[in-house]
Amino acid sequence: MTGWNTHHIPDQTGRTAVVTGANSGIGYITARELARRGARVVLACRDEGRGTAAAERLRTEVPGAKAEFRPLDLANLKSVRAFAADLNGSDGNRLDLLINNAGVMALPLRHTADGFEMQFGTNHLGHFALTGLLLPRLTATPGARVVTVSSGMHALANVNLDDLNGDRGYRRWLAYGRSKSANLLFTHELSRRLARAGSPVLATAAHPGYARTNLQTTAVRMEGRKSAERAVLVVNRIIGQPAETGALSILCAATAPHMKPNAFIGPRTGLRGGPSTSFRAPWTTDNTTSERLWTASEQLTGVTYDFGETV
Image (cartoon, rainbow, N blue to C red; front, top):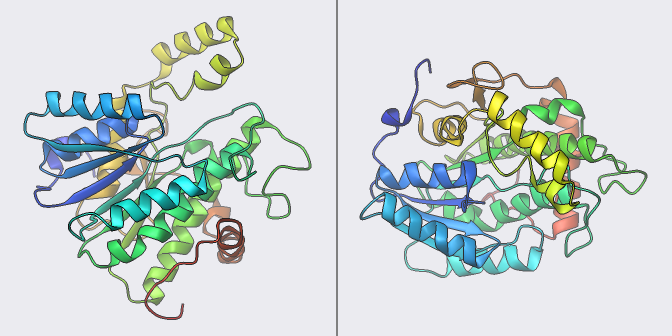
């Protein structure tokens, strides 16, 4: 994996990729580079104006690219179901790559349309539901992969299975860490269930390290903390790496040959650099925790996965 860059992305001609949160940052770069290698990319974004503009920008930067916007609000399960139904009802049955990239970070306490704490609901439950609803299409596509974007900040905290919604007290950074641990537990359990079902679909995870995107400024901007926003921007310039570099780990997890199930790919130093196998907190591969989180996620979202046989 040493020295891996976009030139190592295999030809993607004839393949279809869905990238959530693709209107900016890591998601946009990921979609653009897949399109550059020939993939048809679906930019799944909450904001129609920004999503449409991103698709137009991508087609300008990559002449001849097949890129389209489709609305998806991961904080609203009705929107998730509508997106999946629309995609499953469109022409063709291919879905080669599902990149679960969209996310929110360290927000003040907010709730989704369905009443879930916003970080857990968006970062984990929305993607859990989306993946389950699209699984039949992924299963029907040889070589399909699901890549879920976590964070090195998952090491802040394991999920609290007795208080998934943060009702007993909310600390924004702990809630973020728990949602990112949930992403890794989801990938772990999905890999186990795919293997038991004999499915060829590959589930991996990745993180971009500290990449300069609007993710870091969203929370302080929501609160109107202008001095804090300026401070974050300074830190971004000093420490952060370009979104183009951060996206390499996601692209590697999505396209590199011989990728192993349940792999977790991130920058080689943890914060910066090219893709490498990433540190992973031991609780994110605990079978009991992943099974319990899976069961709770099915109950909360109402989405049950069809693996084609009992798992």
